[in-house]
Length: 72
Image (cartoon, rainbow, N blue to C red; front, side):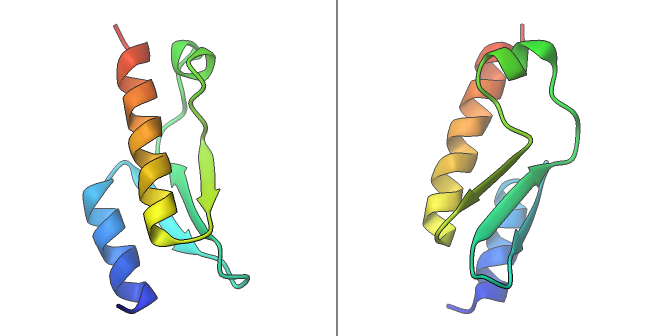
């Protein structure tokens, strides 16, 4: 599968994030909105990166779980 297709699929799956692939081949995601104090305390990050699309998906799921658990 092409990296453009991976980008599109991940972007649809995680609409609160901007997804891109760097010139060095790393996969990145950054949130559209700032984190709350509780989310930061829960270990949420504004930007994450991974070696491949599946690694990025795993991290995005973890980030979503942390953010959900931090919000009242």
